[in-house]
Image 1 (tube, rainbow, N blue to C red):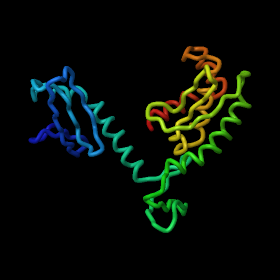
Image 2 (cartoon, one colour):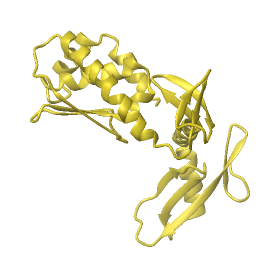
Image 3 (cartoon, rainbow, N blue to C red):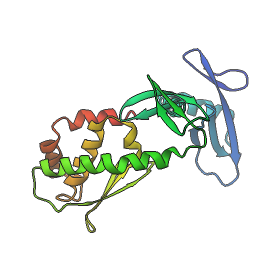
Image 4 (tube, one colour):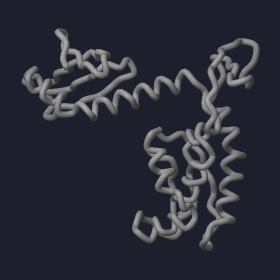
Length: 217
C-alpha cells in the first residue's frame, strides 16, 4: 500500500503523501489538494506508524476524496450548461460561442457573470413554474442568486427570500426544480421534519433519487 517515499497506492496509481507537522495541532487531518497529493496535518510527535495505520483505516474515505477532487479537476477542463458537457476551446476571437459539443471561450471572459445573467431568467422561470404547481398556498418568495460551496439553496422564512446556488446552471433542470421545491417547502415547515419531507414528496415524488444523484456532484 505504501511506497518508499510514503506514497499511497490506489488502483495501480501512487499518490504522494505530504506530512505537515505543527506544534499546536491536537488532531490529525487528511486532505486532498488539487495536485492530488494526500496532505496529513498532525502534531510534531505523531509517529510514521500512527500515520500509516490512520491511512489504512481511512483508505475507502481517501479513495472517495480523491475521486471528488478528480471530478473538480475534470469540471475545470469542461464547460457545463444545464446538464450538457462541452469541451472548452480557448480563443481570442469571441467571448463565448457554442459549437458542436464545444464551447469557444476567451480566457479573459467572466464566466460567473455570464452564468448569473443566464440564471436570472432561467431560475425565475422555474421558480414561477414550481410556485404555481405547488400543492400548498404560500407567499411568493423573492429570488436571490449567488455562488455557494456547501448548499444548493437557502430559504429565509422571515423575509420570504429564496437563494439559489449559481452552480445549478451547470446541472440538468430537474435538479433546479427539486431545489426550488425543497426551499418552497420550507415556507411551510422551517425544519427537516417528517412533515417537511412529505410535502417535498407531494411536489417532487422522485426527490429521493434526485437527492442521491446530487450527492455525487
